[in-house]
Image (cartoon, rainbow, N blue to C red; front, side):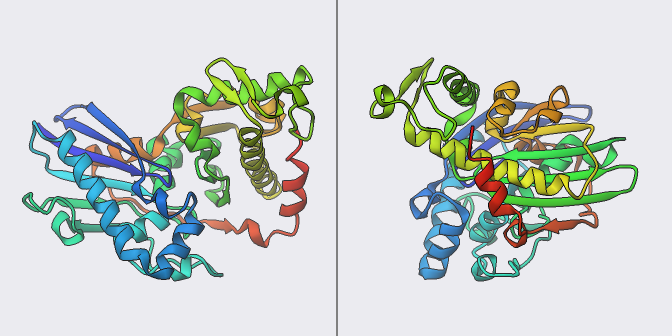
Length: 351
């Protein structure tokens, strides 16, 4: 028996899990979820890249490592852990390892590297009062499709599915991976969805999307996303969620970016057989409501699987299996370079 810590460093939140590993199985003993301490430097990765370039990289790195150390210490205070596995987007990887972020923010968006990183905890300032432990930071695809998405592919065993698969991660960045098992073709892309999905958290995802869908059907929200005068200032209480004008706009911004990315990806691929929705927001998403407000195409109906935090589950899987991760040949679509993206983005802002 051994114990390990798996960590998902999201732009908005960090989730860590203590794993008990036996010869034949494993179990999650406890988990911890906290807001990412780097949120004070900006809500999205582009802002954090800018802040890193303005001389704040060292502070951002120290803060992040300190937070991780505290989370690991709290989870493992009653057991001796033997390893730590981390999955995170490429920007957070650079901040964690205190690597130059400049090229992440300028075309052609070149990270220092996207390879697997194996270090000792003390080498990167983790658990300084603890004996050195091996730390693995999972590899990524590119500057904007990082180790969190590689972890998702690993978690879902996407490369071994005998069909056409589409993974959509609903977080601060909306990353997508399309894989066709018949041809071996893989495409990846990412769009800036903003923090609406991650800030909403697991428990409110269904109410937010379903609420917006229902209020639109009732005429309380019009097709532009505008609340009626009666609720414009106060918002509309829907279950446990207060649907305010700003929340609606955040969701519109996120869903139109996601849908535009899906449409551009669809132009280059065959229709997927199965669509996997991951990320905290994708754990209990009301897919009918998501389709009704235009976030997902009608053709996806009855083909959607909600998968939760596949970044964390992929990190857990690596803790257990320790199999080499091979990044397959893939094509990356840079949505900012697509002539149709802005038009699609505007089109899908409507409900």
